[in-house]
Image: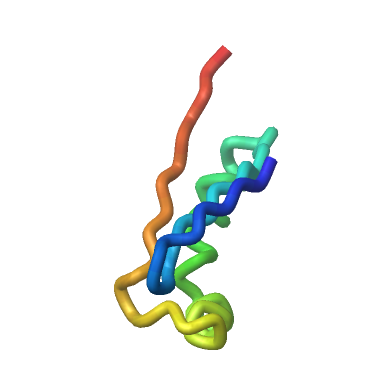
Length: 61
């Protein structure tokens, strides 16, 4: 699922889902968005430092 909301005058919000089925792998990879290559991608689309936030949701069955 991906959802985008564009704000008037620029900016906006993108929501997408990633399903992790192995909790150990999730714990190892959950902060990948902070890696330099990801930060460079954010800069490429005009997202300044500190303008990207990530929320992780954990579902237990």
